[in-house]
Length: 507
Image (cartoon, rainbow, N blue to C red; front, side, top):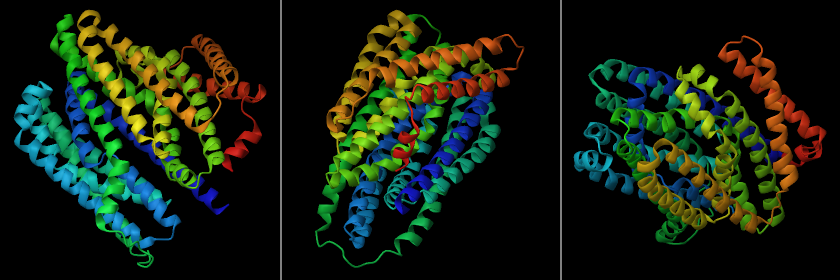
């Protein structure tokens, strides 16, 4: 009972934190888009894609490895092993961060000129490399607190970090944006570095206070390298997968504007299209997945524990519930985004083109949510090598398709590639998950009927409010609220979702 209460409390904390962070992130992107425009957002996304690539070295799968290894140590009562794991994790991530920082700082200019394809990225690259140290340490500490079932320190640190980031961005970008997008991007990355430093110090204070309460007795006698090998066993495939995937995605992001130019689109328009898709439309589409990501983060130690004790029944129940919830949430919000996409673009960004692309990508929402959730669950089952292979296959296919199709079909070709990519990764991850956990997904009750209810309820609601002369805010709010209400009513009446299932999920 106590464990259940802790899990629910942690889920609520993570969900509330994620919602707040997503909202702050949306407001940040809206403000930034107004200041530097979609072209500036496009350049920022290019730099940020490289930022993600190098950050993979400093963080990678170490956070997941720390969570799983410390969860195992705590179950076995070997608390001094926790401190040993944390020391080795800190050492590993700082070594990798230092190596990455030196390389980036020295070769920033050729990377910006020849790899990213825009010399304006050079100042940003030299600034961002210093944040890798703080990011790496923070990721280790977050993994520690997730294993300890304490979500308040990492959650509050994320809020603190975002507040510092927003304050620094507003101050720096407002001061330097008139000098051009190169200075604007550098200002944003400097703000990111300041925020990462602040968050790292904040988290470390919580960590020292908590870890000092652990007993120093009961430690393992294994040599230090056994800890390193265990960390690398888990983090290696995850980090490798993320790095290769990030590398391929970075290549993809750099290729898109170049291949659109080959298609015949002007350079600034190509960068604007990239900024709209990656920096403006996709964050809106992923916003409702906040609660799903929170649950998956908390389920990693639960699934790891059940997997370690060969409790396949609990694994099957957990996975089945989460997949069903993911499908139901993804379907209704996919339809809502399709119906209200144009209004959302005008409401949030005052840009109809953003809304148009939200509408075009809305049918992918259920697949994107399923892909993200299944990927996290597979890693909790120690199947990171499977997700590694899937990521490499998907990213390689995307790069090849972009290289050959976008110069011929332009924007339409890129959108088609996004559809093919999401279908492929969702299929691969779900196929492996079903095979490992033996869960069953009913096509009628989990897919066809919910899809019918989502489309029917949303279209009925939208047709009623279309007759009224409502503002964009009121229209989107009412359509979303009434559509979700009708959808839930249909699900309960048809017994696709039952009271017993909700009770079982809580248990």
